[in-house]
Figure 1 (cartoon, rainbow, N blue to C red):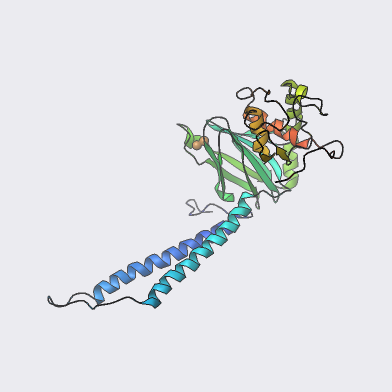
Figure 2 (figure 1 turned 180 degrees about the vertical axis):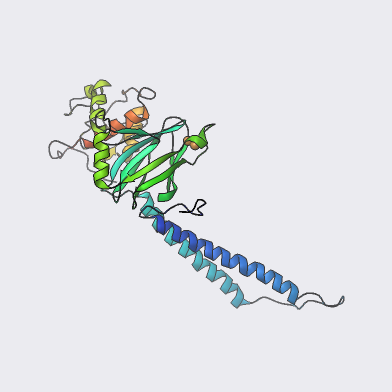
Length: 321
Ligand code: CUA
């Protein structure tokens, strides 16, 4: 690689696709920029005034020209839209078989937690050729996790969780940037992602100091924070049963039905009054400020593992619209 690369390396499954649409749009724009400016110069010379008393031709327009310069740009912009939207949706939706890594942005570092419990700061180790889903949170202000070689970039937004995913295709070390101005040390909020062969990754994981897996930590928090006293495994608790809640449709007191995704679980912990489940009292205290963003991710990781013990009883609300 040259010391002054025009483009970052392409090291993920979608990198070449992103480049391709980028070059297509660049080519279309360049073609028309050159065509239009060329014609401006050409016409200025060709139709210049030769005598002081010369009068311009009386032109009343052309249906054919009007149609051409409407239909051609329309088709070109639709191609960009459909192509771009298709790629966008594939970049935005993590595949179901992704391994999960939690990343928290904080002034001014990236804190990474692997599901096996290994943590790192400003570094990210991932195996090659595996789908990796990043769940992103922020402890303070807006940050943006950006890995140019993978062509992925996602805001870390305080107060909610966002996701991104990639599949690295080449072992190596690549740059991580914060791509959202977040204070005086913003430019120093950088790091490296290291892509390892599968067995090297396993060895790296085994060598890391694990403080319990994310699920184990979440389970411990679930007890320590006394969640367990209200969210019991049977319906005798003062709070809803959490087994099987993740991904299900939840009926709320105000009549709405929401899908219990990661953001719903997160909000229900830090702001329990926002969406109260039908049939329950709004008595849960807020855990805003008492649970760190990393602990929230651990709690969510644990709640996601809670599966219903028995088949859902017929009395359970059916997931209607
Ligand atoms: Cu964090 Cu810029």
